[in-house]
Length: 247
Ligand code: BV8
Image 1 (cartoon, rainbow, N blue to C red):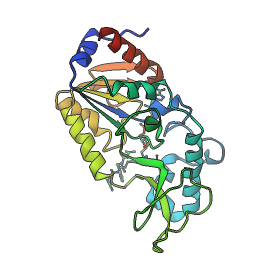
Image 2: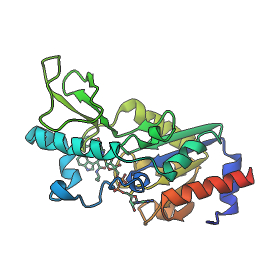
Image 3: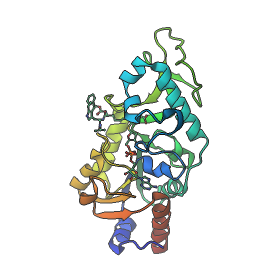
């Protein structure tokens, strides 16, 4: 079993508020390619960052719509992994627990996490480009984006594209949690996409103990108080066991 620093376990035992930021690495063990994994098949010739933009959607709405439909189907076909489930169990171990995700796959909610802050939206949701009315398409069907009944525009995936502002309420809630928490976990994210990537640094400035869980080094590694190097699907369940053994 993985050994954890006694002072980290002590901090978690006395923590009043724990906050967690997750990225695509948490879903990798469910079989969801990370955002910067090379794409495969039909999509191999596209870079995600080139498709996840309003310009790409304006230029070729069908291409971008089909890319999201492809990803939505892929996500619908996988299950949450032990890393997701460990985070869902952790939420009841502290007086206050805030789960913030950059992921758009909905797997945290499917694993039992409540009140998930989805900073970058959700690929299973769609909204009208103009009136923002939601379209209930559980998995987007290929083909051009359907027109909205408002008659003014068509639907788009309800995600935050590069160059678009994050949902203000979600970002404010995440910033408040980062500034107030005692321990901030940064799990499975390359920590390069802003403003989400600012959260662990803000937590550190406000006195939280910052724990990085990642297979690789990131720009946060040098600033983290604790670096748990490895797969989140192994580390998080092991940490949960260690915390409960200390309870
Ligand atoms: C904004 C939704 C204000 C869509 C995503 C120029 C013009 C405009 C903006 C900018 C600009 N320059 C910079 C910016 C800001 C820009 C940005 O940060 N760019 C970066 C690339 C430099 N940010 C924005 O545009 C944001 N908006 O700033 O608005 C504004 C407005 C106008 C003009 C200026 C500013 C919007 C950002 C949101 C973009 N949307 N997703 C979709 O998914 O299709 S972001 C996308 O990246 C995903 O959401 C993903 O979650 C996110 C971050 O990636 P990661 O989750 O970290 O995934 P990644 O693959 O990178 O890393 C995985 C990590 O896990 C790795 O470290 C790996 O080692 C690790 N790992 C792998 N397996 C495991 C593991 N770890 C543990 N266990 C494992 N098993």
